[in-house]
Image (cartoon, rainbow, N blue to C red; front, top):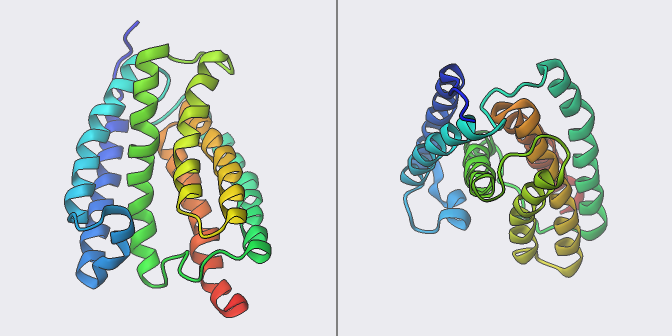
Length: 226
């Protein structure tokens, strides 16, 4: 059964994507090098623009084919509650791993570039590593209707994408192992947030995590550990 597209939600996705493109363009003018580990020599603005176009089509498909939407059916108060208790827990685990295993000094983008880079890259990651593969798996397996087999067929493979990428590029075996487990859990929660509350709340979850791990701790760790 095809559902109706929520054009209000799609408009919100476009606004957020345009903001991400704007932040990317700003950061490129200041220091393009922060994007090079992710995009290489390709112009980050074009990458973000392409992600926006792909993301719009992908989410439009998901809105018609499943409960994955920009604005999901779950109450926003519940989404805020999940973010409020789970994000600090996941960030604390990452900080603890950093204290014990020691990630590289340049793990986090420095301030003030971080304030432009992380909001922009968060949108890119949610589109490319979550929305697109979820759409592919929904097309193959159909949409989940609860915590059923279909949900886990979608959630686990999607979560493993970011987990494996981070593990492969980790500086040590210890950080690779932690990143693999930590980001698998993080990714499953992200897929659930998307399915239950919508793309915007999945993005909010990542942004809150980035604020604690990459920005707040990213500043503090340089004085504490190096």
